[in-house]
Image: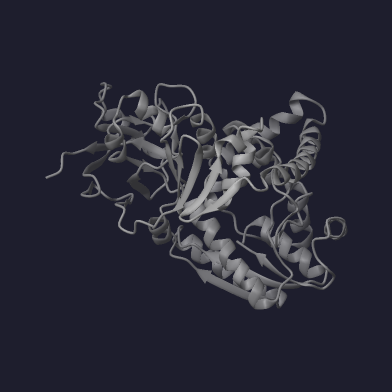
Length: 445
């Protein structure tokens, strides 16, 4: 294992010998193995642990474990406690996005503070495979299917070549324990479902099928690097600065056959996401006037150009967290909540202002917020996912009605209920449901 990591670091020019490196250590198997490997190879390791304070005592126990590991190895140790839920509410993003932003922003400040050469994270080959299938199932091009690169700026992944079994064997040999996140075994999460069900199936479908997909990912990464060079060349001069923002002439865009990746390259630094850019590309063929919003910018499709302007954050946009024990929410919409035993329910069709959900599929706290451009969900009774904006358009809601529509999402960012419209099918009641989570939209007092 050690010699393989050393060879991988050298072949991808990830670190110079004995360099200082910040290592993100959660306490889980992969980050613990990465810490041991880099320490044994003679690097000056700075152990960095994030406590997102989302899992109560488990989060605090993780912090204690990582601190003890750093002390045992005589390594520099840094810890940061984040109020993650407040950050989510302030920036109007999901918990996963918030944790990512907080984590990497702090890691970068540590890198500068310690004069480290890089920030190392513990992603391995199975993580790469899972990421590939997540993007494949959600619908992605080369940018998504290429997965994670060994280096992304100052972020390096020295274990990306190693299967999970190799990492586990190494820790057994080192007689090193680690912390296990209990949610890793729950198959209600897509990544875990892929890990426990899809990937083990590959070897039964085709001999060396696993290796074939790994090879395909490698080829996609090469294609991506070439595509990036070509897109950068094609996008030069298209984005024009104006007195109040930026402008992209439609005539310049329409000279190219692959508009979507070109738009992505032009707009990614303004905070626009892949799903939004797909919708933008489709909107170019319709009447002008469509608007799209990122956290920081507004894009308007005009008759001859796209216009991008910075917007101020709306600090008071109404949002509310629903905790597992809450029975009523007064704002931004009034909701009455109760749990019902599955056996007590009479199976009747529910009105649109009532959501009957599988309590066991929910991850708390839930967030009530206004809909945003690019939101997607899987409407109950329909196949596949759909943009919330398209769903509401098909329901013939006016623009003002859309702007007043709220949704509820899980702590993981999955839409649960488009309030007053339709629940997400992933959280619908099934024969296996034990407890029903009932939410009723009430008229304001």
